[in-house]
Length: 244
Image (cartoon, rainbow, N blue to C red; front, side, top):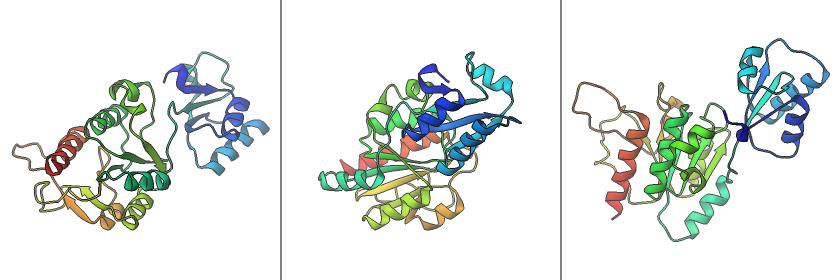
């Protein structure tokens, strides 16, 4: 975590939240109590910001300053509103191509996907507020700066984004091995959104259930899966190929 993407101190974090600063996650000292600390806890819970209770040694590694038992990770980018983004893309005349990332947790995979998304003309990336990889220094570096070029939205749940896409006339395609269709059997030429799952679990079953279509990559070797950023790249470039 870099200094440019963190703030520390209970009062400073409270003020940042109240002023509308985009907070990715708050690290709170385990076992700490007090009126001000309790106020921060309540505010974090009320706003739905991700939090983690950690030993003081963890906080001391994050910053050498007087953190008072709290360090917050802030986003270096401003997030887009999904409804405004979808409307603007639909009205632009371009065929929409969105990415939905279902609790992808590795920042380097996230950065690599953002970089590929920028290169393939993705209209926007949608992530979940809780459980998603943060946008930090590693994300920015791995994306080669593409994080500042591709619109990113955050939603309470990926399923919310799926329903909104479908209501907007955008087909939602899930990248999953739980299908007989390969990416060559599915059409990406119409307005669509591709769901990529997390590194370990894949796409949440409840999200997979509501997708319009499913597709997988043909795997000819003995290893049964690809790195998610590599798989995402294959899906996106198949969309590019079909749309040419």
